[in-house]
Amino acid sequence: MTTGQDNTGSVEAGAPAADVAATPVQGLVEAGRKGGGLQAFQASLLARMEAASSEELQARRLAVTIGQAHCLIRLSDAGEILPLSSLPAPMRVPLTQPWYLGLVNLRGNLVGIVDLAVLSGCEAQARERDSRVLVFSPALAPNCGLLLSSVLGLRHISEMTQISKNNDAKNELIGIVGRYKDKAGIEWSEIGLATLLKEAAFLHIGR
Image (cartoon, rainbow, N blue to C red; front, side, top):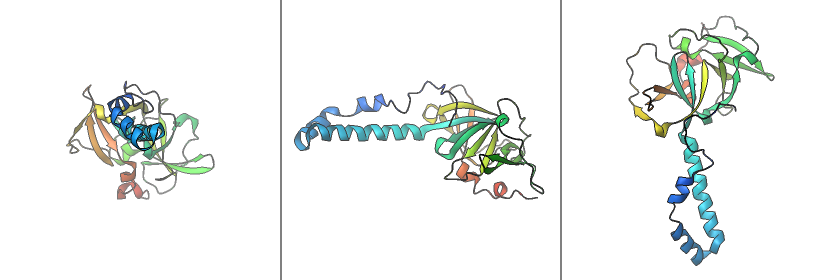
């Protein structure tokens, strides 16, 4: 999945050097000497590195905009991201809600495209050069996609401050599971795609 370049300056998931350096290596070496030698030591170190990589992945989010809102999406929830311009125009489905933009044929599979901004009572997203379609992970709903105004890359939530999920602003996006503020003061709403799939408003596309 192409998500753009990670511009956060964070350490890549494949290089958890800090975690490895912080490991009590001497203790592991001594354990290896007593019960299995170098092979046991290497196996233990590999397990720690894999755990660090998994934690790093869990902390990363796909950063996107939906209309004017800055949003974060778990990488495990996302399937693929496609430029809207590379897809045929969505085929409207009669008697569906205005936020249900229609169906596109994606390599033989019909995917329904949703404008989450309109569903949440905001203005419709302009369909421009940076517009993308995010298809849900096959484990969630492979025949569902969200219209995105843009994809900004990756962000690391450990570098952000978690703030209250309560928001007095009108027409906030549905499906929010967390809210964060980065060092630049930008507020981000984490959208849970699995949460969206439990929202009655999201599921009822008919008028």
